[in-house]
Length: 278
Image 1: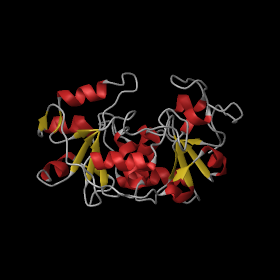
Image 2: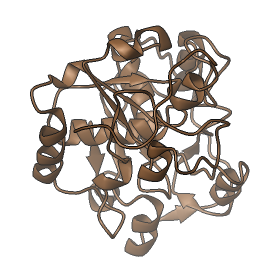
Image 3: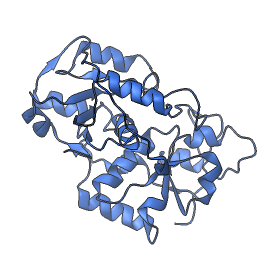
Image 4: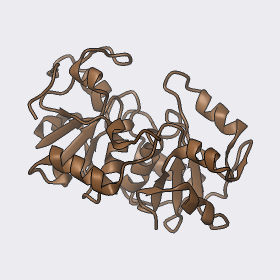
């Protein structure tokens, strides 16, 4: 079972297995470009899942830009993708796992641990020259009946109770120096900053597990991983940090799915700028 990341050679060697491969390419600046790229070429047999249309839903637990889908909608989505409790799932994108990690986290949240993100994503697959195809792919629907691990999810009213809160956005957005997406700049008071990109090397691959473990151990200090809460702009790239935590061999941390877009929508929520003491 692959439960964190998988490289292109490992995936290529498993062709012929009854696995589910899901293309999660997306561009925040051009919502249709991910699907258009999928239609032009994708990993052979891969299905497509859209961050906005499939991996987000009507506001239930949060009111961020990419609200967490309801449990019934997640079961329906995963069933449509041909996932059951025995299936190995591989997610990939063209953004070093930034979007694929959202599908990874959602499946694990729903109790399905056999899910991994393709290290290096679409670019690594193309560079290796492995098999691709065009057009829309489908799979026979399965019965996905997972149950949510609700203890992994934190809602707005519990955020400030977190022993350690980590903002996954770029440092400039965290410090409030710029905010290209949301209406208010800054961060949740007390949050430290660890941008998800710090888990990725110059070639778009995840750093070694030992390196990741050292990074997070320095941030966590004496806080247990299970008590740490990650957030980002809308609950997407925070999942990339949560994936890196798992790849480091640490216990699962928590997600504030609404993230900054949810937090800053309430005028009475406190907002901080600059850097917090480490």
